[in-house]
Image (cartoon, rainbow, N blue to C red):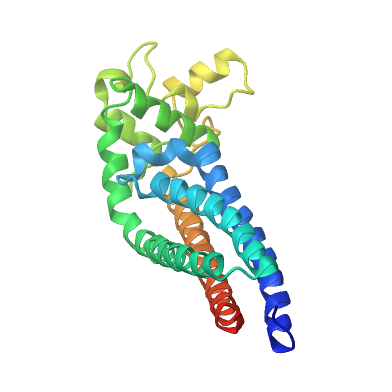
Length: 249
């Protein structure tokens, strides 16, 4: 049994594991929120890092929450092999969270050009590719925007230039998707919005690229910060577990 300083380290480890457990729940929650609420954007990002980072957060959150119990049990029972196992697992999770945090910042800095190219390219696939159609409709409804601006053109004009088969205009033919128009209006207003899109007829006329970019960059910053923050917490857990390991006879 440890005493004196050893007991202080033991109680500090209990407290650290409590904080680590809460951190694991936070990481898990952010990962679930990303997959459940914003995974529809993946097809337009030009990268699968967004959803991959969410899956990584979920897995890491679960493992961190579980492993905190192992560390607490090892400290309570003063079992050296359990403390050593806790240290090793925590070290690998530390590397995983640190890499994940760094990737979040890298992705944040690289998202602009890649996402812009992907969004412009996929406009031509609207109504020809169900995944693209669903992604654009979801983005336009959730972010209250329409299309993507190229040069000085309005964002909603890209449908007429890039996808004339479905949005070439003409009598009774749409120039923008229905998802650019308000669902709160009556059907005549919706049809007029689709056939004659203007700043005063479109409810959703903002540039989707700008709105997505702001959201994705903010989220990547959040993911990167959480990853690096939890990694720092794990260092405390590793130091305390090794200290207690060395103090137990």
